[in-house]
Amino acid sequence: MSDTTPAPAAGAERTRWNPESYLEFGDQRSRPLTDLLRRVPLSRAESVVDLGCGPGNDVPVIQQIWPEAIVHGVDSSQDMIDAARAAGAPGSDYEHSDVRDWLRARQENGWTHEEPRLIVSNALFQWVDGHLDWLPDVADLVPEGGVFAFQVPGNFNAPSHTLLRETAAQPAYARHITEKLRDTVIGAQEYLSVLSRPGWSVDAWETTYLHVLPGEDAVFRWISSTGARPVLNALPEPEKSAFVEEYKATLREAYPTEAYGTVLPFRRIFVVATRLAER
Image (cartoon, rainbow, N blue to C red; front, side):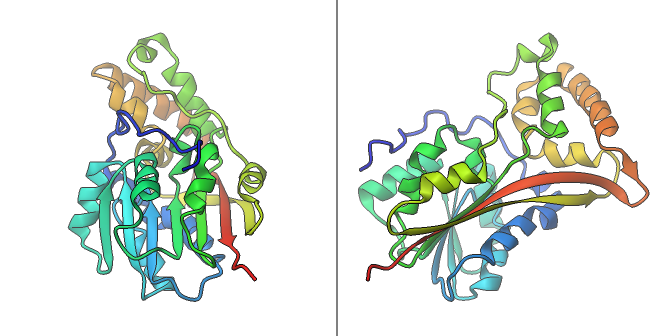
């Protein structure tokens, strides 16, 4: 076992997630996964692990490319796992676990299902501090010819996040918030450097999507189900309602609504690491 293997996560599920809110923009959230998977150099993938599987909406995207795939989803949110199991997508099963605990269990005990040819993650690792230290350990779980592929947001310096941090830093709100808000962005080159080792081929790139969102306060509705959850979960009333109104006002100014909707630029970082077969 690598000495960078993460310790078991204590209190890993501090933030509660709302599957229904998350799926409001399901098509836009799934598009980066589709773009990622189309760069995966596998003609077949009978077994796939989906780290940070959420409510199971990744399963049809994966099986559209590899219809034979059995998808094994892992997520630290019991609410998300319950929603995924309730959806009951054919060819899928789910495990409630923090990714660090899951990694340790696989290193110590091996697989509880068929060894995966693909481990994929759609917007998980940005939530896990120190993940650069042990990403190679995740990659090492795939066999020769296998692939570790993931994408993460690269937008923590965007107005949606800087305004979130600025508003949450006000004394009336800050005294309730114990979870650190994300304020750093790991770039594609850093991921490339960490995963580029002998016996591996790594493809890394970034893309900025221009999501056109419908309806009133669309950017708030988007971020309230993801990046703003730690704040919204932490605040009691009446502070929560006051925060929401203040944050919405700043977002309306930063992201004006056009006749065709509200444009949300969203930078994402992609990595596909392939384990080469020995010659």
